[in-house]
Figure (cartoon, each protein chain N blue to C red):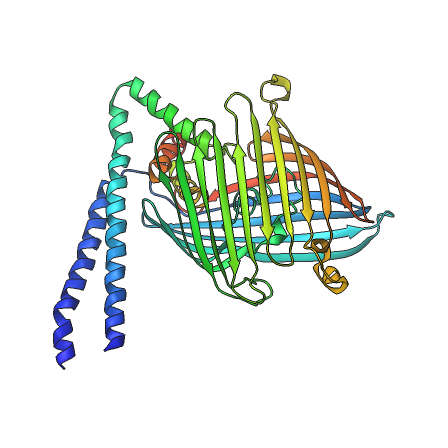
Amino acid sequence: MKMRSLMSAAFLALAMLLALAATARTGGSKDASAPAAAATGSSAQDESLRLEGEKRFRSNCARCHTAPPRFAPRMMATIVRHMRVRANITDEEMRMILRYMTE
Amino acid sequence: MMCSFWLWPRKVAQAGLLGLTFLSSIGARAQDESPKAIPILTGSGAYFTKVTGGTFQDVPSVSPLLLVPVGDRWLLEAKGSFSETFSKDRGDDYFENKASYGLVYAQADYITKYVTFTAGRFTTPFNIYGERFAPVWIRALQPGPLTSPITSGSSLGGMLRGGIPGTEKINLNYAVYFSSNNTHHLLATDRSTGGRISFFLPGPRLELGASFQQVLQADRPHAAGVFFVWQPNRVPLSLRSEYVRSSGLKGSAYWIESAYRLSQIPALRRLEMVGRGQQFFAASKLSAATITRLGALGKDTRQADFGLNYYFRNDVRASASYGRQFVLGNNVNIWAVGMTYRFVMPLGPTGNSL
């Protein structure tokens, strides 16, 4: 009985964790749609986003190393995800840096 | 029987909740328009000639890093290291060669908006050098700092970490971990716990932070550290420092390093000048036997290093450095000259390229 209660509690905790993660992902997706919307907007908006991405790159990545060469977007997506973990950059910053590095 | 009947609605609710979250994640994935990440093999290679107190060493090394993204939120990372040290005397006769290899980390990361859950073998999140500046292609000076041996460099267990955007003026990032004891000679870790917290001020580009580590075995020493990184906006200067103090036999130490890129002079824009000063204070009242056992950690040490880095490209760099180490009765010169190369190669279709 005690074992089952424990398993139930663990199961519920896992479900809550996944729910939290899914919520976070949905929040991030809103951010992800921003670059797409910006692409159809004015060039001033594009320039503003580019500058913001560059600023985030200089603040976070350049604190430790020089800029890497530009790679294909799918490679950059992996590199930026790795750096998100290593450098503790936020979800929003990751998306801005990825956009800047793949323009 | 009664128990099963009582638990049945709860099981349905749990299954429903899991199903709901699964559907949410599928829905969210459909909206995400970021490029899909692919597995890559990256890392660095280096070749250095070092002269320490008259002993020559040629050291080729390679550190491959495999990154495998899974879905939108998972990342599997594994980094290894291999180096061969060829030692030779003043007469150019090689008298020893020693291979060294190991698993730097092998971890699974689950990334959410504010928290990344990490499990496996990972670099201990203590201060800044081990996690950020240790790779040969990043470190500004090849000789490592005297703070490194004071705390555990690697851990085996779980870690929570992340960055939290605060206001436009300040960001917070944090890491907490728990590690189990592992006695394998290549993968040794201590049973320990600890963490790090830092604040980054984007305006002045200043990061300030502190770390703590408590070892939960043997004589249970703890260590505390503080650090800062500052990159002024107006000059291509990077100033960084860390201090570590241990309650055990491993003493305390600090280092402060500055790196200045001569990008304002067109002819020298690829050149970087580096200087570092550091000091190690051995624990007090150590017995002669303990000093012998601790080796370098048993004696007070001061060291000053100067170096030059020339960036042929962002991923190819030549480095040279000179350092003078002052240890009672055994002062030595430390020279290092060599090259580093960072590589990145895709392990899947890249789609359109830049």
